[in-house]
Length: 227
Image (tube, rainbow, N blue to C red; front, side, top):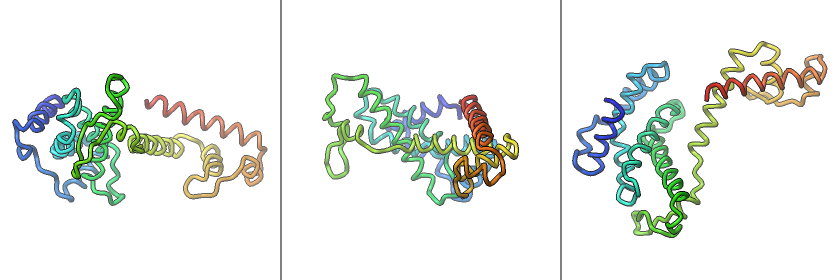
């Protein structure tokens, strides 16, 4: 199913024109795990399957905010983006249910949209009600802005750390790798000062400093080139 087609069907679902039940059901735990393993190995069809079988989750989350949004169509777009981010960053081995993780990612993308709209719409009061919770209490823009939710930032940081570790393992020479591991305590080892590293390896502190600086620049250039 193409991306535009997915967005169109999601719009119908949220508006109630097309029932959610017409979308593919959630995968069984076994099929879901198998799809994630294949997707991690570059199988695009497995990745698309994960998206298609979790679109109803996007619809469920979007419906909560749909009637109060300035641009309801944007909620579907960002909700789908949140689902895709969740699929690309989910770690199946940590024991968390994917549906729980994905719902949080979808909701976070929607809240980020509300924040950006708030910055552009100064005529809107921070105390305007945008939703009502299950107990009848109003949810205002100020509630959203004050939410300490950093899941997207945490995901981005985790992805960058994993890329950096792979680069250290596969692209640095033994001396560079050894110095970075000792300096920053990688792999659950103790972190040492430059002077301590120099003493242990029997080299000068200035040499340790040069190797460390050069290695960090290589990592930074690699991450920058990766976008």
